[in-house]
Image (cartoon, rainbow, N blue to C red):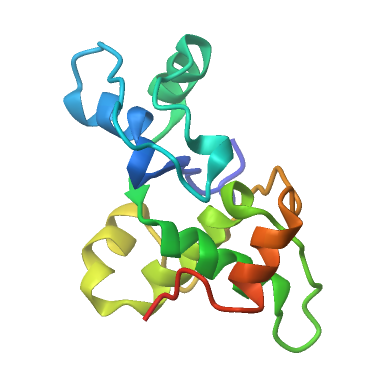
Length: 154
């Protein structure tokens, strides 16, 4: 193995209203956790409330971290990607796709989350790959979040 290759960490992010993967991982007993009740979320693509058996098997065997986040984290990611700094390219990402970017931003900016940032290994030399699997699937809601500040992070 090339000595310059460092450990890769895989983190899975769930929206808090339907965080079935997070709850299943936290229970650590192999039984899937089903989230019931009000699971509607701006992260509609993540709002199933029940883990896919195939996805859970893969995540169980390969993910290092499982995180459950509130709605505003996804909104923050959408705003960051849609309003880049300097020469960074603009990325139009929907809620489920932008949640990881919002999480990384919050981990790096919020001192109360230092413990989690350290556990994940987000230091000055960390390299990240956040995968967004969607654009603005709901254009009206996208504009409400990005333009009008729906789900503020302050």
